[in-house]
Image 1 (spheres, rainbow, N blue to C red):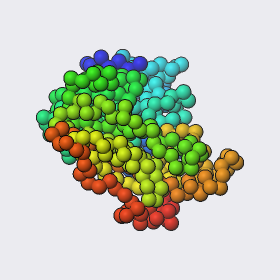
Image 2 (cartoon, rainbow, N blue to C red; image 1 turned 180 degrees about the horizontal axis):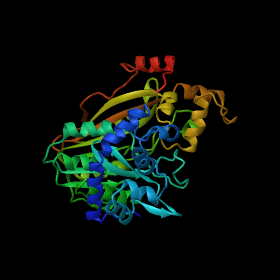
Image 3 (cartoon, rainbow, N blue to C red; image 1 turned 60 degrees about the vertical axis):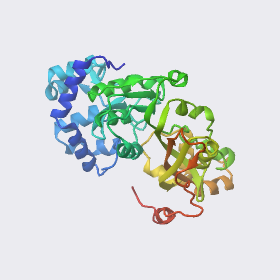
Image 4 (tube, one colour; image 1 turned 135 degrees about the vertical axis):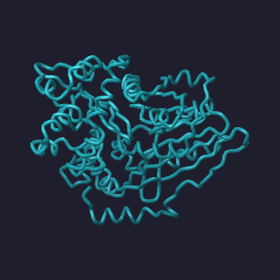
Length: 395
């Protein structure tokens, strides 16, 4: 259990991370492994090259990035005693047999901050019963949009938060009124610890309080608010003809917590075909009869499903993903899949988009500020997608 109330010890750990240039060291690690844009580097690749590293670097990465245990003697050699005890008191290190290790967690430098997150399930150091999310590079996409829309008087709410990334950015941009709605209670201690680790302040808020009204925000942002992670099992059931399960209830808090001109930025990952974005159409249907809401959508990328699998090879993968990855990579697969299903998978795409909602309570009718992106009529990304398909580039 993380002890986020140990402020003095957490501050000591932060100063130590700064002193050893932890952020720069991790950039060096990614360059060394030829994985410059990877948040969680490949475990096997690291282990295959660990002997080439300076012993201090090898120890630091092994313990704090990859979750491996180490003997007390190594900690005594490489870490100041007061920092070692601070790591123990805050729960970042635990004793395991005769060694010490991080308990299924790691320290990630991301967007200029430090974050304690779960280890990826693909790491052998991660307990098999750990089902926590990890941070993905997609978070940077909405983070950039947040920075563009932010001003220092913004009353900010982060929704569906795992580790408080957007809230720490909001604090650094000057907001002293930041609230966080965790995606699950299990992430509360991570969020509070990460706020303390970056010397930022925000308050945790629950959905019931939001629904009760009385709390209003000028800017709201979140990731995958509208849908759960892509359910790859739905391919098997209805051959990509599904609709995301999005109901009014998911959006109910937004009008009640919004001021006039409140802006909500929702990063959404959607399934689609060459000419349709299923989630996009669902959101359009949901809001087109609402009053006082401008809805716009920006598609950030369109990626063939096989390339998506390769791009996220080290992310947490569900059993459904694993089965479909075997199909898209021509590996042995479940014989129950029909030829039609396999053909459909080959034509599947993953869309990443930011849905922007602007609440204009003085307006009688809602309208679309920009037409919803419809690749059936205009799709500058089709050529890029086809290029990837034809050349099968290694990422």
